[in-house]
Amino acid sequence: MSDVSPRAQSVVGLVRWAILVAVTALASVALYRAWGPLPDRAAPAAARARYFCPMHPQITADAPGQCPICHMALERVDDRHGDHAHAPSAPAPDAAVTGVVPVMLTLDRQQLGGVASEPVRREGTRDPLRVPAVIEAREGGRAEVRVRAPGFVERLAVRETGVAVAQGQVLAWVYSPQVYQGQRELLTARGWGTQPELVAAARQSLDLLGMDPRDIDAMLAAGVALRAVPLRATAGGHVVRTAAVLGQYATPEAALYELADLSRVWAVASVWERDLPRVRVGATVGFVSHGGVERAARVALVETSVSAETRAARVRLELANPGLALRPGMYGEATFPALGGAAALTVPRDAVIDTGSARYVFVHRDAQSFEPRTIHTGALLGERWEVLDGLSEGERVVSRGAFLVDSESRLRAALAGGGAR
Image (cartoon, rainbow, N blue to C red; front, side, top):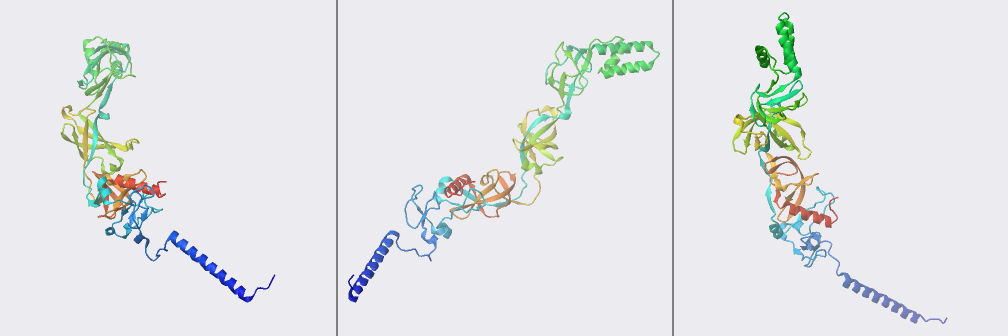
């Protein structure tokens, strides 16, 4: 190779540097055009996010435009509602209520959806408890009429149900060979007249076979055994069931009549399990039938089980029934007196959302933002829930339209990857 002069080498070096500077300048211009100026990191992100999507609050922008998800026009954030409104927060991974997140609704959307709120109030728990009740015959007032010795029904005095009978009244006449033989033995023993103990034993035998003492005396007075012995009512009441048929063969296993004493009846009330602490055995309660007449009743028994289907327990109320005004099967309303106690925090019944595993409300933080919060409830006091934990007096909760706010919250959580698990 030929030797290069020092001057030529200097020229080549200057050309190389010029080319490097030109390439760097061109690259800088291209980057500027593609990405624009670097953002001012000192300015808070909330100050740049001036617009957001009402359906997807996580989509924000500093200029008007459309939501890339639903293509709705972005709405401007109202500065009057605080800095937190500039950029709606993303769902917190450790939110208090699983599957729901804080949500923002514009005033227009709240008006269209009928969303309203009211403050948490402290109220007394002295409202009475009113529950439905149905009239039933008392178990202790029921009686059955049976024969003690097999026989044939030869005559009927009472044939229909619903008939009122007195204790000892004749219901039917029954021919029983065993009872007929016992009568003849008693008459024979009395005819001997020398052994009184035989007469007493024969009379007791007839008594054990079910023959009434007055019928035994009538038979002894007549001196002739009765073919058909009277079958008498074992208690007073109304005939609620009859199985006696003329000519049938009656046995001790089958009841011919079933009687119920309706002078006192039960009103069986259905009380929710959450309200059972308000029921006291022996307490006096009011009962109003559909006729509008109010009667005093006494709590006789709270049954030990709760229905798996209705989650209610049966409470037996005992009350007098003059003139048979209350009949089994009639409905009415029982009113339990309120229990004394301190005032409690309460919220409207419609404000509480119950998922089965948790109950929560939406707290109205300001004009446009709502926050879900888990609460623990006590008794249902009319149309308001007693709140044991989770809220403070004066906080505002969504009282109308809570399910609309809940659906918006769940939709936002699902789209942001924080849906219910």
